[in-house]
Image (cartoon, rainbow, N blue to C red; front, side, top):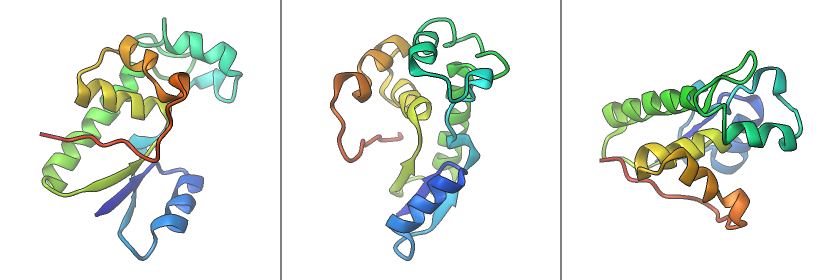
Length: 133
């Protein structure tokens, strides 16, 4: 198994604590959270309504849109398919990349994926499985 995580130092350190010595840990910037621009670290009361409406396709002020995140994750998935097809990999990512996986792999709409997000439904579990064909 290979372990992919965002390139943030905190994510890499968490990955090392859990997985170091068991499998390779490969940082990949495409797995980073959405760049909320001037709203990075802003209250979720401000950011979440924007995530679910205008910033699916329009970028956050000085940031990126969820469609931009989806493009990054799609590129990452092509990379996985080409370089690691048929292998199991673990991915650690944040909210937007995880929801983008639901859109890209499970065929959900953004609206559906956001409505069914475990953070809203209070249905956390230790992992999610996705199958790349």
